[in-house]
Image 1 (cartoon, one colour):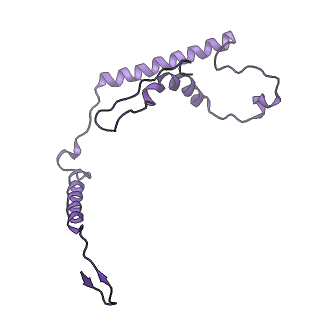
Image 2 (tube, helix red, strand yellow; image 1 turned 30 degrees about the horizontal axis):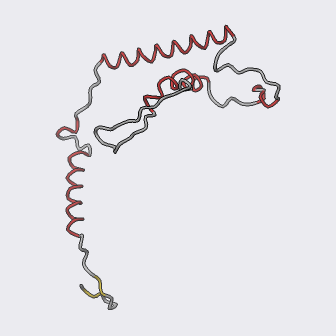
Image 3 (cartoon, rainbow, N blue to C red; image 1 turned 45 degrees about the horizontal axis):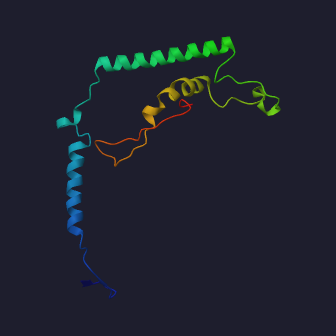
Length: 143
């Protein structure tokens, strides 16, 4: 321990060597991975064309099916997302501004609800390279 000018004693930091070592490791990682342009830093990931095209094709099919479902719902006057008339004045949509744009509403109704199980998976383990997910069951068809 040492004493300062005003007479108070202070102790040397017992973790100074650990902090110095961590600073050295941090500097090494920054020089290696922080876009210095040397070594493997320029390595770009390549997406195979087959995977890219099939992904776009899958989205195109889902979008087309959604538009067909909307068309038949309007023609037949029956659909899950059609708004039915109610006797309440507060349900008159002509007097309110729309909450969503047409594409946002279409995406939510026809695409996201169909593929939400891919995105919203509850994790049942610690995060890492491999994880365990809970299997969910829907009684309402994920509506």
